[in-house]
Length: 151
Ligand SMILES: [Cu+2]
Image 1 (cartoon, rainbow, N blue to C red):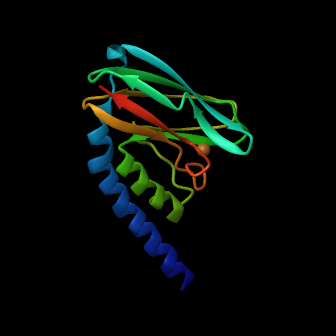
Image 2: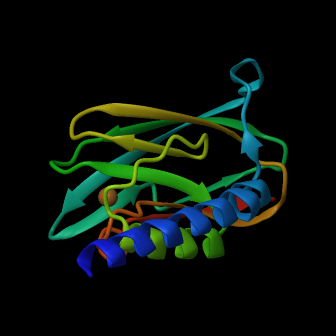
């Protein structure tokens, strides 16, 4: 019974993963080309006063920018940063709750160990409001999400 349940969760996660890849990152932009980077933004992963945060909590960039994010985890726990639409991150968060150990190899996401740095190079092809979020269970609710305004 337990085995069956686990199998079905994995199958559900796989289906959701396909949906997220098809709709989320595409809407937020596309994998960036390092040679076209025109902006570098440092994002810190911080744990303070019982909360988990990204600093800064909001960034504003221009449509067409290729941004190199340098992601510094100054906390004690492992974190991740996923760039997506707000809807895409919510969908993905449910999938992570079903399968907390899932690892991301997608160009819109990076997982960073404590005291280590990571990098995402992303081209923002649409204007609108997007989000960077940590989807490890409980982290988003602790405050670990930031707003991306693309104008
Ligand atoms: Cu986190």
